[in-house]
Each structure stands twice: as C-alpha cells, then as structure tokens.
Image 1 (cartoon, rainbow, N blue to C red):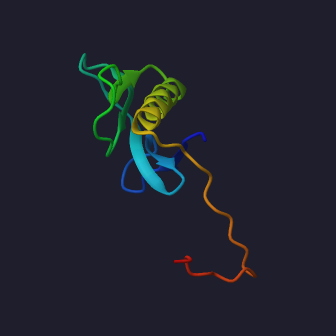
Image 2 (image 1 turned 30 degrees about the horizontal axis):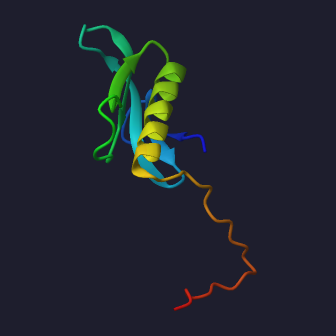
Length: 102
C-alpha cells in the first residue's frame, strides 16, 4: 500500500508527515542539506533494526524522489520485519461492533 503525505500543521507548507494508514512512519520536508543546499530531506521514524543496507534517512532533489526513496526503505523494513502494509478496515455505520471471540 502506498504511503500518503499529510501536511505538518505546525510547520510551513513544504513539510509533510508520511503516513501508513493512521500511523506516522516518516517525515519529508524542504530544508538545507549537509552541503548547505536546499533539498528535500526524508526520514523513517520509529523503525528499529533492519538490514544493514537499508537507509533510514536521505536527501533528494524533488519531493517525488524523496517519497520514492522513503517508500522503498519502508517496504524493505516491512519485509525484514515480516510485516505487511494493509488497508484499514472499512466499518459501516450500520454494522454492529463485535467483541473478539475468545
């Protein structure tokens, strides 16, 4: 499932939370790189472990490139962790909520 962007309400317009359903898994924002150039910075948040080759942060020339790189790292981490991204359940307003069976 593709990650989505949500505007960071506390920051300027070029600052986004990266969401997997309702879970914030990263951030992408326009800022200064290590070389003091303006670029898109991205980072995964809250992931622990992972393969040594996996990047958890980086810079990119465009927002789309930053999204693509973050998405690739997220998918790498999910595979490593033995997890998968799923769509949220769709609840009907008419459907009764049931307790889990024991």
